[in-house]
Image 1 (cartoon, rainbow, N blue to C red):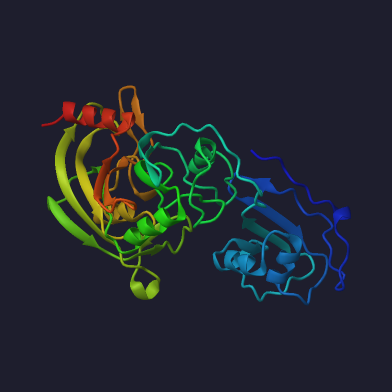
Image 2 (cartoon, rainbow, N blue to C red):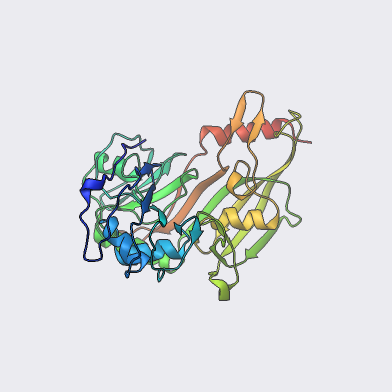
Length: 352
C-alpha cells in the first residue's frame, strides 16, 4: 500500500469565499485509486466541480466532471451533479486516480519473447501482468519491463505506452505485438484499425454451446451499474458493434471432485472481428457459457485436488498479420501457459 498523504488544516488558506478545509481526512490509497474526503466550512458560491479542482491540484476540471458523471463523487453519501453548490457541513467524497509519477521506471520483469527483429517484437504475456501504467499503477507493468529490456520503442502512444499497439486484460495470457519504430507502429496499427489482423484465442468455458460454431454479434458498452465492467448494450444506449466468431474444439465431462471442478466444459476457439474491452468475456457470459475462472463475468474458480485456477481461462494463441518491413504475411503462436495446460489435462482425464 502506498504511503498516506495527509491534508492538514494549516495547509490551506481561506479563499475569497472564506472556504477552507478544517479537517480533510487522510487520503486512502488502494493502488490504482485514492479516496478523498473533505468537510465544507460554509455555503459556497462555487460549484462542486470547481471546489474539487482547487482541492486536488493534479485533476483538471474536465477530469473531475468525468468522475462526477461516473458516480465517483458523493456529497453526504449521495451522488450529485457537477452544478451542485456545497453547503456548510457537507462531507464531499471523491474516488480518483492518484497524482501520476513523471518518470517510467525500468524493471527486470521477465519477458517471454516469441519473435524479434529490428522493427517489432512479439511476446507471450503472462497472467497477472498489466500492459501499461494507468490509474495509479506506475510500476510492475509490461511497459516497465520493456523499458528495462531496451530503449528502442515507438513513441506514437506517448512516453507511458512505448511500442504498445494493443492490449490484453491483466489475467489474459498470450501473444502481443510491440513496435520498435514509429513507422512500424503506424503500419501495424493500420492493420488493427482495418481489422485485417487475425487474432485467435483459446478459452475454456462452463457448459457447452448448443451450436458447435456460431457468430455472436452483440454491441458492448460500459455496464450501467459497475464502472469496471462491460455489458451488452444497445447502440442507442452507448453500445458499440462487437462481433465474435467461435468454434467448439472439445467437450469435457468433469467429475474429479464434488466441488467446483465438476460439470460440463468446452474448449473454444475464438476469432474476434472487433476489439472491444472485455469483448470475449462479455459475449460468452451473455450467451450462458462464461469463461472458467472469470468471476467478474459469471465464471467460477476451478478446483480439482491441489490444482486451483482463479483467473480467466483465456489465452491469445495466434496472430496473423503483414510484416511492417517485408510486407509478407506472418503467423505467430504463443504456447499455452502452464496453468491452462494443466486445466486441459485434468479435463481430458475426466472426459466421457
